[in-house]
Image 1 (cartoon, one colour):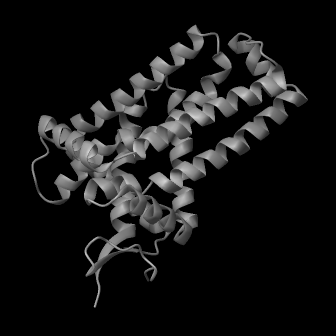
Image 2 (cartoon, one colour; image 1 turned 30 degrees about the vertical axis):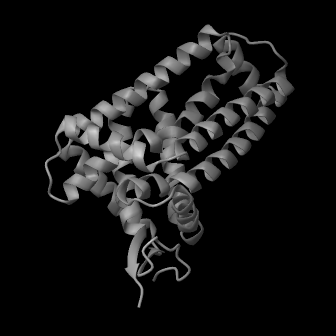
Length: 266
């Protein structure tokens, strides 16, 4: 079954349609994502390495700045910019589905070209959301603990063994979940949709939000899976991202293809 009030394309004879999906659809997308990763491992590992390097750089920056209390929200919020980083994975999956060769240089070049031409201001929205999340996290820490920045062991003790710390953890994660759901809703389908079809970012965002509203259980569940998987990857020093990031990127592409379709009108 499909949603009838789908967003219209520029072509008046066609429209975007959001399909109803299930948890089984997500599992199938994961299987296809793993298949694409195996078919183009060098591209996937390169994207994962880029993502991991970004995590290392951000972590050392907050440590150097004496803002170690921002390490956790930074790592959690870093996942919010994942869809932008994964655009080359969408291009690789598109090529694999079309039976085209997935050469390293050509795939990256085409992904960058499409990104410049089609993404518009969507990456700025994602980055802005990430920055706002960090500002909110810093403000919350200051409200609960003041401006002090203890060493990591003491920080864990303060957060996990005191009433103030536990309340901070609950409130911080609740607000973080709100930010995550909002940004996930506008980006989960919009990035692959823009890479796949030359439409405007507003239509892409509206379609993405429509997809999440139509399929809250499978898509929010997938978003939770993404957040937990990426958070767990930080415990490996971000090394697990070499596998996790490409798997999630390819999976998101196949989830988009299963959810958003073009329908002829008339």
